[in-house]
Image 1 (cartoon, helix red, strand yellow):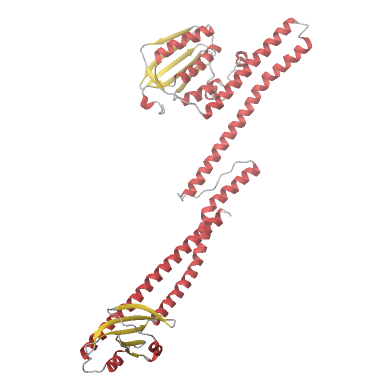
Image 2 (tube, rainbow, N blue to C red):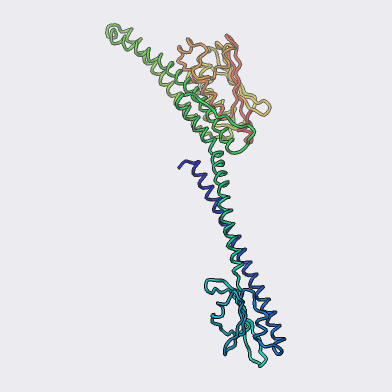
Length: 455
């Protein structure tokens, strides 16, 4: 069953059930009150009649008294243990045949005789000879039953008539609720058929949950479109970057097959080229996988570190590994909050870039400014053109492609650095002059209460 039909069915059943229950309850309460009212009236009338009979029974015979007090639509009688004397109205002659019972005390109840409803009242009285008897009155409540029957018909008709607007309103309500879902489904189908991202048209004036759902859908489409474009660009760039080393490897492998055994220098050149390109492909693949993994989960472990000591221990390791001179500048002991492993990876990326694109000593400085600690890396290399600075964090972007290929760069290092910095809340600032060198400054939070706030 479709959602619209379910909403229509459940809403209609609920409202109709509530309407029926309400009408039945009203009818039951009203019926009970009317019957109780008839009982009270009959009881009051019986008490008055018994009182009058007790006062006048010595002057007037019981038969005469009964004819004076007989109900319009009922019967009145005096019943003793020995027998009875009754008088009935012309409309209720059949009550004369009803058997009477003597009761020692008062009694009042509803009775049914020959499919008709009556109120029965029995009150004790004392006759003039001292005999205890019952003054019994039976009064028809058929007029009340007729009124209740009319009321029942009215309630049934009202319920049936009320079902019409209930069904119509349920249909309108189901359409109103499911309309955004139809639009969303139709939009999804159009996206599926056309391959183009589309959005819902929303009523800006409304602030209900359905509009919020539509806004969420549109936001999701925006994210999907953005990620789709990034994926297209990423796949295009990755395929382009992998195509070059694969072509080189294929060319040198083909050259080895043809002349590798004849010329030793060509053999060594081909092996070296293939080995170099294979290493570059491996590094590029590892970086791609690392970036993809980081997009999913970084597992950040923030801790308090001595930044001065941290850089002092890191610099010699890098210097010994690459045989590059490094100068460390620090004026005081500085502590900050960060993920030590991620920070080390971040600094290595910038040190590696400084090593690749400069030949002079690399300077690393540690200091503090306002509420931030900083690590500054300076090189005297080729620098970065001003127009290229905004693009250096884009994946696969290289400022000097010829020089980058010479050093095996893939264009992923700075992109990874930007993602690591964002993950551990480090702000990166880069200043560079072409032909003069590059300065990279990493800003870190000093206090634990601000290590996740924006710098």
